[in-house]
Length: 131
Picture 1 (cartoon, rainbow, N blue to C red):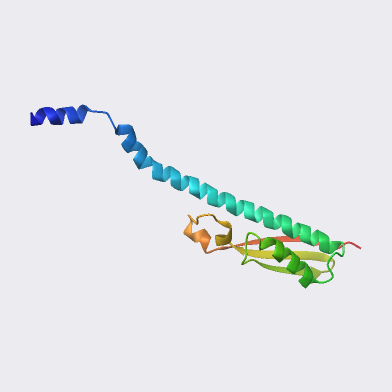
Picture 2 (cartoon, rainbow, N blue to C red; picture 1 turned 180 degrees about the vertical axis):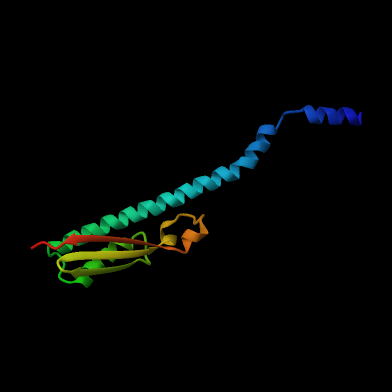
């Protein structure tokens, strides 16, 4: 009777898909979260570049009077999604250059990659000053 029960257990295929899915599901879930975090990083960087370019364009047509005013405007726009961002705007030889530094942790949803969480993302844009 004991051998009969073991033989039946060995040939029984019920539940094998459940076990396989339980083994693979955490890996797919981790990959999905990883892709989400990387997508948020790229999206945040693209948004930051757009904001910096808009601010530089506004400064080039004399909407702002000083570098500090342009930096404050750009930083205010970036703070919506990155409160710890720093922005520096300078004008040298008629070229406006703005650099923003954002902590990667502000842009990530979960933080699946520990090395990226502690890093910073820098975005720089230049614009000619209008006459």
